[in-house]
Image (tube, rainbow, N blue to C red):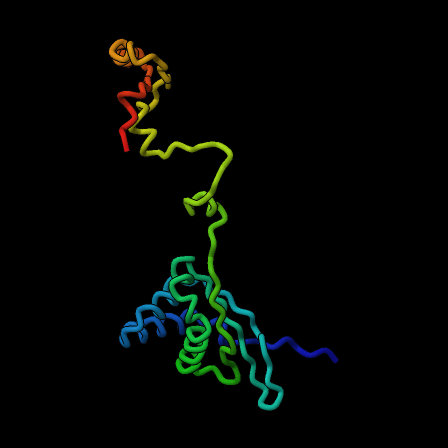
Length: 180
Protein backbone atom coordinates (compact mmCIF):
# COMPACT_ATOMS: atom_id res chain seq x y z
CA UNK A 1 0.00 0.00 0.00
CA UNK A 2 1.41 3.41 -1.04
CA UNK A 3 1.83 6.13 1.53
CA UNK A 4 -0.19 9.28 1.01
CA UNK A 5 1.92 12.38 0.40
CA UNK A 6 2.30 14.52 3.48
CA UNK A 7 0.33 17.76 3.37
CA UNK A 8 2.22 20.64 4.97
CA UNK A 9 0.68 23.77 6.49
CA UNK A 10 3.68 25.89 7.46
CA UNK A 11 4.85 26.68 3.90
CA UNK A 12 1.47 28.27 3.13
CA UNK A 13 1.84 30.51 6.22
CA UNK A 14 5.45 31.58 5.70
CA UNK A 15 4.61 34.95 4.10
CA UNK A 16 2.38 35.87 7.04
CA UNK A 17 5.10 34.74 9.45
CA UNK A 18 7.67 36.83 7.60
CA UNK A 19 5.37 39.87 7.78
CA UNK A 20 5.03 39.41 11.55
CA UNK A 21 8.78 38.88 11.87
CA UNK A 22 9.40 42.12 9.99
CA UNK A 23 7.23 43.99 12.49
CA UNK A 24 9.03 42.31 15.39
CA UNK A 25 12.43 43.28 14.00
CA UNK A 26 11.21 46.86 13.47
CA UNK A 27 10.08 47.08 17.09
CA UNK A 28 13.41 45.71 18.32
CA UNK A 29 15.42 48.04 16.04
CA UNK A 30 16.96 45.17 14.08
CA UNK A 31 16.99 47.03 10.74
CA UNK A 32 19.51 44.71 9.09
CA UNK A 33 17.39 41.62 9.75
CA UNK A 34 14.23 43.47 8.75
CA UNK A 35 15.91 44.57 5.50
CA UNK A 36 16.70 40.96 4.67
CA UNK A 37 13.13 39.81 5.36
CA UNK A 38 11.45 42.68 3.48
CA UNK A 39 13.65 42.48 0.37
CA UNK A 40 13.89 38.70 0.03
CA UNK A 41 12.30 36.57 -2.63
CA UNK A 42 11.32 33.33 -0.89
CA UNK A 43 11.09 29.71 -1.82
CA UNK A 44 10.60 26.68 0.40
CA UNK A 45 11.89 23.15 0.21
CA UNK A 46 9.05 21.28 1.92
CA UNK A 47 10.00 18.30 4.03
CA UNK A 48 13.69 19.20 3.97
CA UNK A 49 14.16 17.06 7.06
CA UNK A 50 12.09 14.55 9.01
CA UNK A 51 12.49 13.51 12.63
CA UNK A 52 11.13 9.96 12.79
CA UNK A 53 11.11 9.93 16.60
CA UNK A 54 8.46 12.61 17.06
CA UNK A 55 7.22 12.66 13.44
CA UNK A 56 8.07 16.33 12.83
CA UNK A 57 9.04 17.87 9.52
CA UNK A 58 11.53 20.62 8.96
CA UNK A 59 11.40 22.90 5.95
CA UNK A 60 14.23 24.85 4.34
CA UNK A 61 13.53 28.51 3.64
CA UNK A 62 15.59 30.18 0.92
CA UNK A 63 15.80 33.98 1.08
CA UNK A 64 17.22 35.46 -2.11
CA UNK A 65 18.25 39.07 -1.49
CA UNK A 66 19.78 41.80 -3.70
CA UNK A 67 23.56 41.64 -3.91
CA UNK A 68 23.96 44.86 -1.89
CA UNK A 69 22.12 43.35 1.10
CA UNK A 70 23.84 39.99 0.79
CA UNK A 71 27.32 41.51 0.60
CA UNK A 72 26.63 43.87 3.53
CA UNK A 73 25.76 40.83 5.68
CA UNK A 74 28.08 38.17 4.20
CA UNK A 75 30.36 38.03 7.25
CA UNK A 76 27.44 37.25 9.58
CA UNK A 77 25.49 35.04 7.15
CA UNK A 78 25.58 31.88 9.29
CA UNK A 79 24.41 33.60 12.46
CA UNK A 80 21.74 35.58 10.59
CA UNK A 81 20.37 32.40 9.02
CA UNK A 82 20.17 30.73 12.43
CA UNK A 83 18.58 33.83 14.00
CA UNK A 84 15.87 34.07 11.34
CA UNK A 85 15.06 30.34 11.61
CA UNK A 86 14.87 30.58 15.42
CA UNK A 87 12.69 33.69 15.31
CA UNK A 88 10.31 32.24 12.70
CA UNK A 89 9.87 29.10 14.77
CA UNK A 90 9.00 31.28 17.76
CA UNK A 91 6.18 32.96 15.83
CA UNK A 92 4.20 30.15 14.23
CA UNK A 93 1.99 27.58 15.91
CA UNK A 94 1.90 24.85 13.26
CA UNK A 95 2.12 21.46 14.95
CA UNK A 96 4.81 19.00 13.84
CA UNK A 97 6.42 21.45 11.42
CA UNK A 98 9.27 23.92 11.78
CA UNK A 99 11.83 25.86 9.79
CA UNK A 100 14.89 23.64 9.92
CA UNK A 101 17.26 25.82 7.90
CA UNK A 102 17.30 29.30 6.41
CA UNK A 103 19.61 29.93 3.49
CA UNK A 104 20.54 33.45 2.42
CA UNK A 105 21.29 33.61 -1.28
CA UNK A 106 22.54 36.48 -3.42
CA UNK A 107 20.47 37.60 -6.38
CA UNK A 108 22.82 38.51 -9.20
CA UNK A 109 21.21 40.28 -12.14
CA UNK A 110 21.87 38.37 -15.36
CA UNK A 111 22.29 41.50 -17.46
CA UNK A 112 25.11 42.82 -15.29
CA UNK A 113 28.47 43.47 -16.97
CA UNK A 114 30.31 43.12 -13.67
CA UNK A 115 33.75 43.09 -15.24
CA UNK A 116 33.19 46.43 -16.96
CA UNK A 117 31.38 47.84 -13.91
CA UNK A 118 34.41 47.10 -11.70
CA UNK A 119 36.42 49.79 -13.50
CA UNK A 120 39.41 47.44 -13.56
CA UNK A 121 38.84 45.63 -16.86
CA UNK A 122 41.69 46.02 -19.32
CA UNK A 123 40.44 45.79 -22.87
CA UNK A 124 42.34 45.60 -26.13
CA UNK A 125 40.98 48.96 -27.17
CA UNK A 126 41.08 52.22 -25.29
CA UNK A 127 37.74 53.49 -24.12
CA UNK A 128 36.72 57.12 -23.81
CA UNK A 129 34.62 57.72 -20.70
CA UNK A 130 31.13 59.15 -21.33
CA UNK A 131 32.07 62.37 -19.51
CA UNK A 132 35.15 62.87 -21.68
CA UNK A 133 33.22 62.10 -24.87
CA UNK A 134 30.54 64.62 -23.89
CA UNK A 135 33.21 67.27 -23.28
CA UNK A 136 34.95 66.58 -26.61
CA UNK A 137 32.11 65.83 -29.03
CA UNK A 138 28.69 67.37 -29.58
CA UNK A 139 25.81 64.86 -29.36
CA UNK A 140 24.67 63.60 -32.75
CA UNK A 141 27.35 65.40 -34.77
CA UNK A 142 29.83 63.80 -37.14
CA UNK A 143 33.14 63.47 -35.29
CA UNK A 144 36.33 64.75 -36.91
CA UNK A 145 39.90 64.95 -35.62
CA UNK A 146 41.78 67.92 -37.06
CA UNK A 147 45.50 67.23 -37.25
CA UNK A 148 47.65 70.29 -37.84
CA UNK A 149 51.08 71.82 -37.40
CA UNK A 150 51.64 74.29 -34.57
CA UNK A 151 52.07 77.13 -37.09
CA UNK A 152 48.44 76.80 -38.27
CA UNK A 153 46.70 76.31 -34.91
CA UNK A 154 44.62 79.51 -35.34
CA UNK A 155 43.37 78.30 -38.72
CA UNK A 156 42.54 74.87 -37.26
CA UNK A 157 40.54 76.50 -34.46
CA UNK A 158 38.64 78.64 -36.99
CA UNK A 159 37.94 75.57 -39.15
CA UNK A 160 36.62 73.73 -36.08
CA UNK A 161 34.24 76.62 -35.36
CA UNK A 162 33.03 76.81 -38.97
CA UNK A 163 32.42 73.06 -39.24
CA UNK A 164 30.12 73.23 -36.22
CA UNK A 165 27.51 75.00 -38.39
CA UNK A 166 27.36 71.90 -40.61
CA UNK A 167 26.92 69.31 -37.86
CA UNK A 168 30.59 68.40 -37.61
CA UNK A 169 32.08 68.18 -34.15
CA UNK A 170 35.83 68.65 -34.56
CA UNK A 171 38.61 67.84 -32.12
CA UNK A 172 41.60 70.16 -32.03
CA UNK A 173 44.27 69.02 -29.60
CA UNK A 174 45.52 72.45 -28.43
CA UNK A 175 41.93 73.48 -27.54
CA UNK A 176 40.39 70.21 -26.34
CA UNK A 177 43.13 68.56 -24.30
CA UNK A 178 43.54 70.10 -20.88
CA UNK A 179 47.00 69.76 -19.32
CA UNK A 180 47.14 67.48 -16.26
